[in-house]
Length: 239
Ligand code: NAD
Image: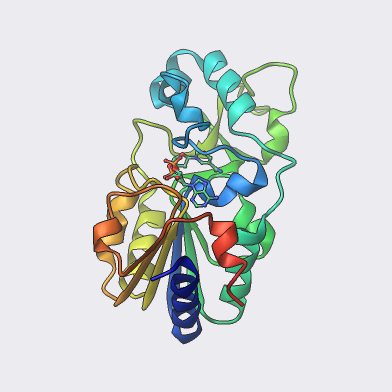
């Protein structure tokens, strides 16, 4: 099988799909200029960075947490790329029922996808850790590194799942249900090493499980089709 015949096969399966689901990760936003965690130039290679995105860091060293978060996790000028746009179009055409994402950048919604399940939350919403008041990203526009709640002075945190925290149960169950009922599952731009998100893939009961990823993943052996290519290059060849 050549790459182009594999891409043609994926295109055919997408045409036939009625309840397709896309499950993605950081690689989806790579072409938007947001680095992933595990590719050679990814954030994860800077040793110990997981600590700065942990619950412990936010609690014990909020300045360090926000220094890292502001520098590495916020991309206000990033725009949806061809991958986000293709997924939004396929949803509109009735081929995909949902996008399940590990990303926190909001680019699927910006591209027009309606049903987006954000497993790890979003960098667009913030909550006071004391009085639970909610804010948009404008709460970060302060001279201080750590945003404070204007009502009670409590520390404000991003609505993202940090290392050391459980996933939001509602989103997880929502994702489990759409994956369990899907007739086509396309997975892309994820190392599939972050759990429990990746373990959701075992819920798939359909016959067409496709992985489009630049590097190998632990789920490749279970897939019906593996395309080891950039998502943008693959999706732009499917109409
Ligand atoms: P990851 O960094 O572990 O893996 C990314 C994978 O995508 C790699 O296997 C890489 O080979 C592949 N990849 C990179 N560019 C690609 C492309 N253009 N086409 C196809 N494949 C490509 O990412 P992950 O599995 O999502 O896990 C990292 C965690 O970090 C997630 O939980 C996520 O929440 C978070 N994160 C989010 C963002 C974001 O919101 N954009 C960015 C970095 C990390």
